[in-house]
Image (tube, rainbow, N blue to C red; front, top):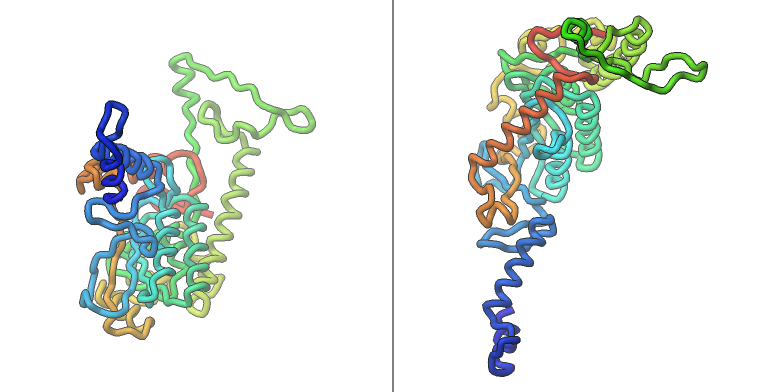
Length: 354
């Protein structure tokens, strides 16, 4: 580019219509910024490269020697499991991006899921479980799970893709069940004189339909409750089937159903009934996944998104800005999780039942 700019400069005396080299540099810089903002990217900016192999993921050492030849990926699954709602990437998309990066890295010999979540959306939990199973089929790598503070409901569902589960003694896990909340504010509205007029489609006989089922503006009818209960029971059946498959040879299907009433367990209690394979600490889980990977000296590494072009140029580049986004994302997920919907979610004070 420098030679090209020099040639332009030598082509003749500068006039008002000539474009000087510094003007070309400004144009190139502006174009690079615009393309970077649109996600098209620029190869190297300010000495930092965006590698297609790493898919914009930056490694950080978790355990072991930095110069080890092989590595085990530590993937955090934390907070409420929800897909993207506009405030940063969602749980599913984050996992997919990381798994794709791992498949492009020949040094990765195993995966450890660090799970600290009360669960979340039914579909988001199921998609994460599915993506992990497909990753295992393609990569043939061992996948283990380490339960931290909470690995309940959807968090436990996702862990069913793991070959081995280690729980901390104080972990809260289990909560196998489905929950859905439908608020009813009709009495409060009556007291203040507010009503909602709803016009909806009818059924094939010209009678009332279920179009506004779960409306907070009126009590739920027995027919509506029966319909919703049927949906929840079907989702509960799937949950118990997934657990029975994930714990095959360690728990009988009838035992899974017996425990699938929403109750939670400590790590030791979970081990006693067969929900986990071991109780221990991080170093125990690290040793186990290294053994499964047949690589006792493998280093454990975590991943985070590398800074994009806008961040490198000074826009929201601070660590506190990234932390603020993570807090906002989690707050949005928690608010949405409290709304009407079908959830594999454990919350203190809630009862999840089939």
